[in-house]
Length: 259
Image (cartoon, rainbow, N blue to C red; front, side):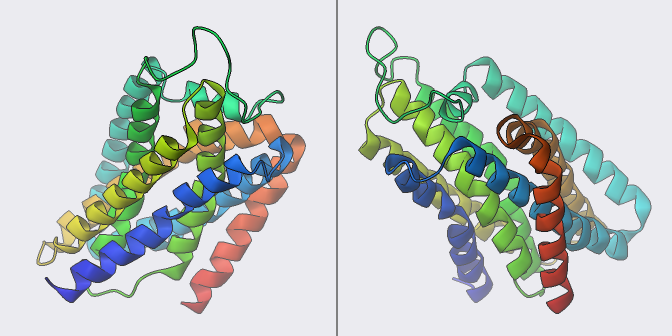
C-alpha cells in the first residue's frame, strides 16, 4: 500500500483518537459542564482558523473563486441535510443530555434504559458525519503532496474531545453500558482512518476538482461549527464563549504561520 495512504490513515486515527479518550474522561467524570463548553468554544476557534487558512485559502490558490464557492455551498447543504436526518431520529439528543446541569454517568431507571431506540448507533453515525470532512482533508493534503497540517490535526482533536464526553455521558444516562460505548467510539475512529486513507488515494485529480473537494469539506465544517459546536459551547460556557473562540483561533493561526 502506498506510503501516503498509510500516513493519512495514521493521522486520521490520531485526530479521531480524541473520541475514545473523551469517552474515558466521561466515565471518570473529569470535566464540568462549563469546562466542556470552554473547550468546545476553543476547538471551534481552532477549526475556524484551520478552515480559513488550510482549506479555503488553499482551494482558492488552486482554482480561483467559483469552484471554491460551489464547493462551500455543496458541503454546507450536504452536511445540513445529513445532520437534519440524524437529529430527527435522536442522534443529537444524547449529547444535549450529557451537557446538561443534571448530567451524571448513572443510568436512568425505567423504560428509557437500554438501547432499544438504537441511540448509540445513531450517535455514532452523527460522529462519522462530523468526521468525514475532517478526515478527508487530511488524506487529500497528502494526496496532493502537501505535508500533514499539525494545526488541522490539533484543531480536530480538540473539538472532538468535548463532543465525545457529552455524547458518552448522554448514552450512559439512558442506560448504555460503558464498554459498548467505548467500542463504538473506537469504531468511529477506525472509520475516520479509512476515510483519510481514501482521501489520500485521490491523487492525480485536476486542480479544480481538488479545490472543490477541499472547499466542500470547508463548507461542511463551517456548517458543523455553526449548527453544533458554537451553540453547544454558548449554552454551557455563556459569555466566555467568544473569548475562548478567539483564543483558539489565535493559537491555530500562530501554528499555521509556523508550518
